[in-house]
Image (cartoon, rainbow, N blue to C red):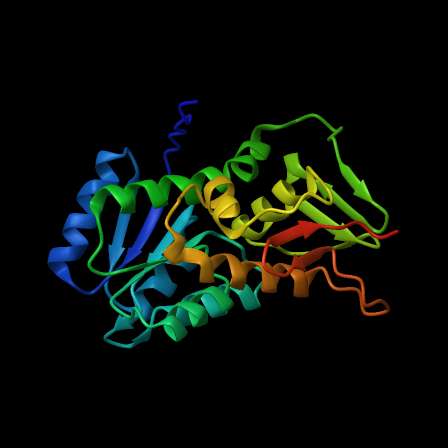
Length: 243
C-alpha cells in the first residue's frame, strides 16, 4: 500500500551559523511551503522564540555563543514540548544520545540528503498534527484510551496517570499511542522505526532505545515496579497495562 504523505505548513525557526547551509535549508523548507525565520546564535534564537510562536525549531549544535541543544534543555525545563529537530556535524553516538535525552524529536547529522531532510521535517510535523488540529476542535467530548491509572486522549495529545498530566514530546506521544493500540503486541525496533518514525534505516535504532527509555521513565509509578512499556529481550517492545 502506498504511504499517504501529509503536508503541513509550519512556521519554523532555523538556528544555523553556516550561511551556505542555512540558505540551502531555508530554500528547501520554503519549497515545502513553510515560513522560515533564520538566526545564527543561541541568544538570537531565544529572543525570536520569546516574541513569536513557532511550530518547529531546527537547531545546529556548534553555534558561536553556545550549544543549540541548550535551547532544547531550556524549553523542556519549562515544560514546552514544541518539536525540535537537531541538524549538526556532531555524529558520535554519545552526541546523538545527548540530543535524544534532551528531548529532541529528531537528530540529523551533516552531511545529509536533502530528500531525507524534507521527509524528516514532514514526519516531525505529522507527529504533532493532532496537537495542531485540536486548536480547531470545539467539541467538548474526546475519545480516550483507558488503562487503569493511565489515560490517553489522542485528540488532545494528553496523557495522565492517576489524573496527573504527563508531559510528552510529539514523538514520545506517537510512540505511546501506537504501542497502546495493541496492548501485549511486541514490536521490533525496525517496526517502530517504520510506523512511528516513518523510516526503515536501522542506523536509527538508538533513537528508538532512547525514546523508549524516556517514555518509560515518564510513565513510571513511584509505588510500583510495573512499567507500561516493557522490553521483550531479543525481540522488541510492548505496551502492557497493569493487571
